[in-house]
Length: 140
Image 1 (cartoon, rainbow, N blue to C red):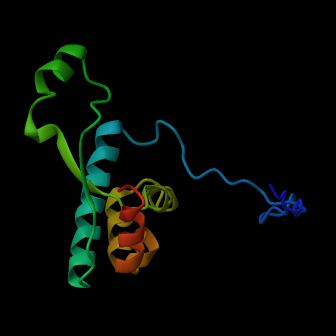
Image 2 (cartoon, rainbow, N blue to C red):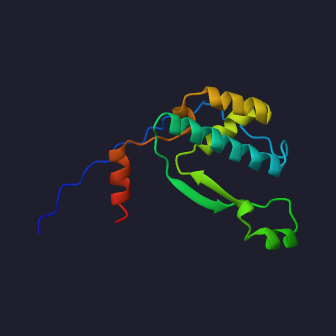
Image 3 (spheres, one colour):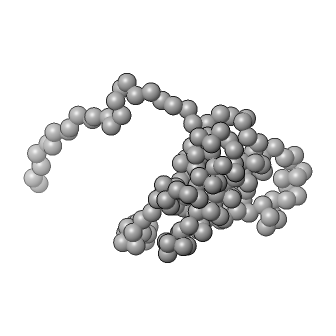
């Protein structure tokens, strides 16, 4: 057997300088959980319409809404209800959407207007057809 030569490792160089200031983009308890959930659902509808108008194809993921701030009985009674299901798309950039909400000082109406006026690439992670096929082929 032939043993290959050892490849020298390159030293890791961080892309962010050590002097970079970390900025908080979320203030806990500034907006209620239900208002936040409503905002995210509305933002999803806006992004879906934007993507459809540009002929973009999104990957749907259905999940149950988190039932924050509700009693255990309410959660149990409503968990099976379709009103507590949400459709989300893999391409949504939730961190970017939440940062926008923070920039708009948690004014959901202003954040939705800003979202609608932004290019779709700002809040969607878009892949080409070839990238999608290669990604999906990795799971076969």
